[in-house]
Amino acid sequence: MIARRFESLKSLRLYTRSSIVTNYKQAHGQVIITNFYQILTRQIWYISL
Image (tube, rainbow, N blue to C red; front, side):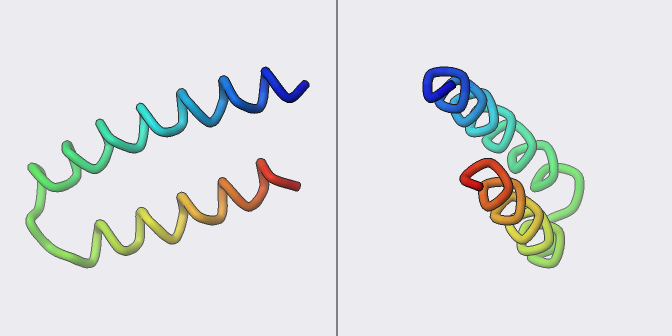
């Protein structure tokens, strides 16, 4: 279970990196990135439960 959680965290990190890059390329607004980080921290919070 711990290993699975680690794997999901690893894939989430990779997904995050690529999503931030594509979001940044689509629109250079700071709003999108801050919104994405709010969603990301919520996801990490759910995973850690």
